[in-house]
Image (tube, rainbow, N blue to C red; front, side, top):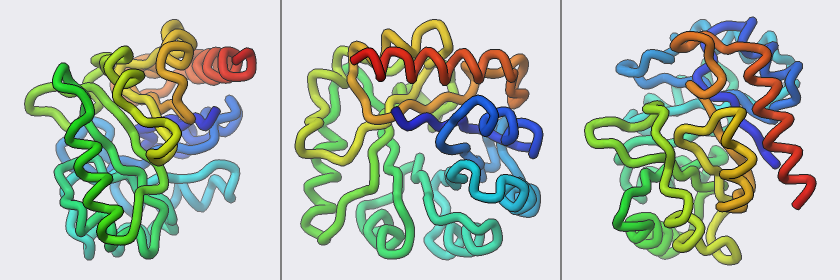
Length: 219
């Protein structure tokens, strides 16, 4: 089970994720997010990690040039596109980075995801992984709302599509059930392991990792 702790803004929180056994941290560069981190601070965090976990740059409707510049500054090789980026941009960045393509799932299902993946195949590429979050009007993520697990399980073609990362409203007390229902390759959490907005809690992070890994190993 691949586990990402997202919304890291300081070295102390990154170290909490490392000590808990997470695989990756998310560095959010979306200016309207309460968990936004300046590229200079993100670079310091990446340097302090010394490769202990994978740092992932989270972008929302940034240009290709902006993504490349920030990734170069911070030493990032994995990017998460969490906005309305067109398939052509996903394909262009996939030539140089591992791309996690985020989608927001609502009652209508994952048809938009299926169509974009088909377009990307036509462009000769697929994302490294797909992250499915909750669909909340006017928001790109980080809302704490649960993704529709049953719909994701029904619509996500695990055998043919990129590895699935489940996000949206996950917490230590519900992540095991989310993994049981959806059977994702990985999970992603931000607010569910915070004592306050953007303030990661070591006990919650540790419980989240233990519960996600425990149900995964049992399965």
